[in-house]
Image (tube, rainbow, N blue to C red; front, side, top):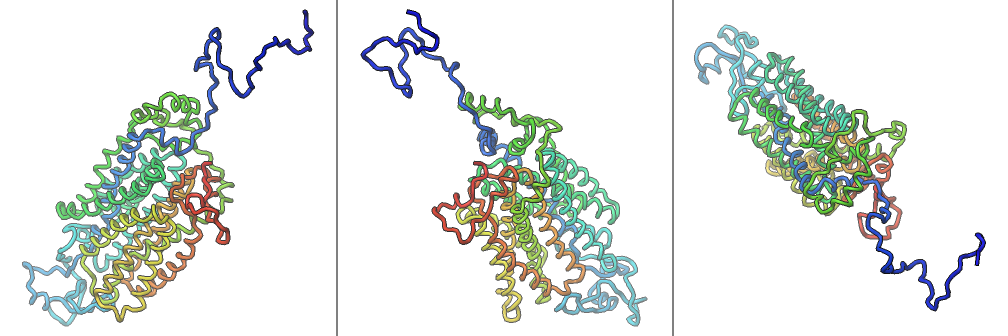
Length: 581
């Protein structure tokens, strides 16, 4: 019988009903089972930042993290050597003949009162009697003799006689050094966002080696100050590029641990600086010891040794082939931990860089709010640290020795990193930042309000507490900024916060230039601003165990929940929307 095309097909009578459409029928012996290749591939989602990091493999991830930590040991020589090379030892006018006895010094040098409040009388460092007679006093005529008991025997002060009328060049050098750090954080932070982390790192390392050599061969103070500015900018750029690259290579659970290890390596470099200085006794040797090993890290430019950050590559145009990523993920899961991800090892094309919409950035009010709060906190914590280091000398007129001050500051920084590692992942970034700034403000208020009633031991205790809490706050500010800034502007955001910290550090050489006159008002202003920073920290979101945001839209989602909103859960992880979902 013929059927029309529009008629339904004939169904042979059968006592068994047809299987339902939702249940696949078993294949008959005559029909072979479909092969795996004929099945349709499941839809593949574009890789997120966390998946891109995992695609590197655990072994490759650990190696890259170790490579990003190692340069900190030598960068510490360049970033922390300024107190050594600018230390001004006790001195007096050079007198003819052999080493003068105390009787000769008393007969040749006038007595004067110290420049700081509370200083006692001492032999003049810049004046001498004219022609051996005590009727007239003149400036030093034949140079100076230095009594070096601490630090370098030959630094820029003793080599170029930067004392008395030329002492103003020392604070100028310190100001230019800090301005160099500020310039490097801003300029090379932006470069890391536009050209990539690895390119910014190689540029910074190359400039650090070049200017490190030029600093060591500087013939006069003006050349030294200019080269020191450039060296500070390059060293700050290398430190910043390594910091954000290291963070972008970590899982959320490892970020604090890896950052703490990098901080402790920097502290180890600062401690190692003292024995190196005692061994070479020359400022040229100290700076050369820090700059020369950086040439070894130029090998990071070899393809495959230190690839680009996978999170930055994810934002770059034509940087990752999504189809090849899906194939490798599905077919090579068993060997992912042993092989490197070839697509991530390849450099992006020269024209591929993340697309940044400046109008969208300008209207990203939440990102700007976070930068302002963290930058203000960084400004206070970096600026007030100097107040605690010099408080005893300002109040009692008995400045502690250089070794005591230096070791106390470095050890306080190391202990701060250990405390952050123990507490931050348990209590959250915002809570510990709030606690640290509160302790900083309280230590300042106690020292300023009760300094006439405190003993020497109490002043030391509260000064150490303030120094410790301010350094912990400064370190946590940088980590907090790197975690809540989106990848597309992470280098610029961290650079801005670090630059504001450098602005706070400018108060130290300015106070030295003024011989610490007005130290009380200076400390009062920073203490008041610290209390204001405590209130502003409440506006920050929480980044504990959160994935790093990628785009500006992701960064805008990092908001603090409204104070009046009732939470339906007690899990801190769910308090802030996940920017990658």
